Length: 288
Image (tube, helix red, strand yellow):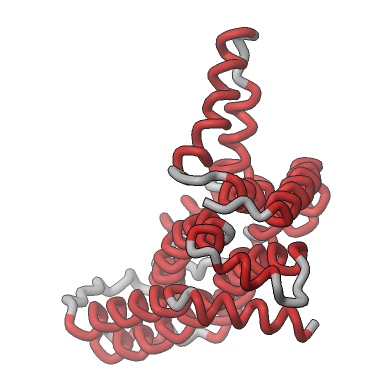
């Protein structure tokens, strides 16, 4: 366990962008809240407006989530390639650390540690922004930002996203690591061209698009449909009634359905196989 802790610390030391990028986003959002223009129309009579405050806080979290997804993908592509490029793999192989431990620590950094760092940055930023906006905006809107229920839902939503997305996107992360352990150049192309080639070959020889459909579900539509109830219908309804009722995250989460979905565990099994292949490739120590 101590070895894994030091390996993850190594990743944080060598990849300072893990914490610099979310810190920079937080600073920019705070500056925007501090000096930007704030105009909030008063809601109708009897409307508490808690939903509007919740949607604002969720929107700030979505910004961190989008940037985190892009950075995590880049980190995975570079994770095993960089040590081959600068020949540091020779030094690390001389240490009493197995290839499996190294690969798994990098995978855990991408799927767990980086999301936790962004979660902490988003939480701190939204607290500061809520304080600033509550001072600058109208009283009803400021009060809506400090609802204990909203903050509890924010924490639950982030933790739920971290756990479920780590499982769902495991095959994607493992594929990027496999490319990082094998390719000598043009990592982005090698990560994209083989799947596209399979899609093209299936369309050419069989006239079907099952591979493309599965890839689209895994990358885009499958996760929200598996992890949330009535997606995106519930979000549309929540947005339309934002000023009349608070957004209820608890009604959106579907952990039982996610755990019962065959696609969840088929993807996890495929991801485990790809991780094993990445470990084998790193053990070969392909240098650039």
